[in-house]
Image (cartoon, rainbow, N blue to C red; front, side, top):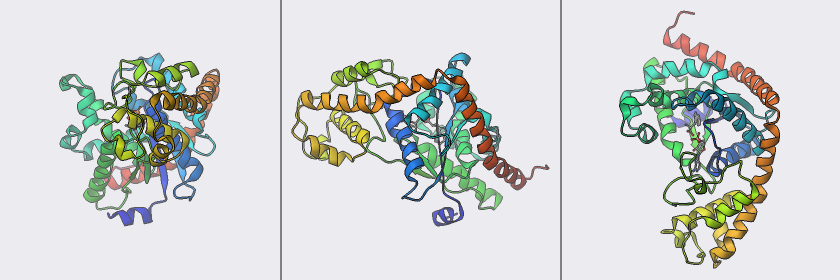
Amino acid sequence: MTEAAASSTFTPRVFSGIQPSGGLHLGNYLGAIKRFVDMQDRGLNGTPIETIYCMVDLHAITVWQDPAALRQNTRELCAGFIASGVDPEKSVLINQSQVPEHAQLAWIFNTVARMGWMQRMTQWKDKAGKNTQNASLGLFAYPALMAADILIYHATHVPVGEDQKQHLELTRDIAAKFNHDYGVEFFPMTEPVIEGAATRVMSFRDGTKKMSKSDPSDASRINMTDDADTIAKKIRKAKTDPEPLPDTLEGLTDRPEARNLINIYAALQDITSEAAIVEVAGQQFGTFKPMLADLAVAKLSPISAEMARLMQHPDEIDAILSRGAERARVIAEPILRDVYKIVGMVR
Ligand code: AMP
Ligand code: TRP
């Protein structure tokens, strides 16, 4: 199927997911959640679009999760979404395991995807490490479940950070092979939406590594639960170089740490990195860092305060997720029914 066919035949719909494996950080916020809120509120090129956002607990357990911690992290992630501006009335907010159609479609996709495709995934290689024989089968099949998350809603647009690009290409490969093998034009060719000034937020300790919850150094990242003092201290201590800031982005080519702070400054204010560098040209980090710290505290502290407030009401969070699952299944059920029919299952 051509891309033109995809966009004309399918109602535009946004889907994205985040793993409730603990510790939402600034990378998740700027690369993903903030973009989710933008798409919910502004639509796609000004046209309103249906948005579905998911806590992917089935993905999280592809590496060991303590059950009590998983439950807590799922609620905390839900609180993080809502505190950041995802509105459970405007968006469908769900926990993956509460919508069984994701796992059901994932099984079908396990039969469509090829071993070789999975083996090439950099996230698999990174997470499995050297001892692949001891990695879970679920970790290997992870991208087929991710394709199912998206395609069970015929989602056409998926906002993510840069690191998910390869998984979205695989999603298209799975959709195309399914369509081809069964001679149908059933699944859309989903578009990744990797936009904004901070699609890849880097570590504060090493500007060549992405900011990540798995980095052993807490100073490498801003956690969405950090208080104002901690946020300011981490920015003050972030690794930089002794040069003043240049007046163009080209001047930052070999200065990854400086470039990262500029991208964060831009993304927090919803401006481009080009506009940000013009604004701060010539400044020393001694001036720029306190400015960035003030901005980060102003934008992030209300979110962490609201998360803490919502976490006092786990029953309300659970009710929001139950309602979200009901709404999601209205879309997912008929699509799964059609898939089973296409594949030849007697119903
Ligand atoms: P994860 O925590 O791996 O489930 O990631 C959730 C979302 O956050 C995905 O869309 C990622 O692409 C995005 N993300 C994670 N880390 C970063 C980062 N350092 N910079 C930008 N986006 C990120
Ligand atoms: N793999 C994504 C990550 O680690 C999470 C994810 C699961 C996802 N299913 C998805 C993202 C569907 C977008 C769409 O960040």
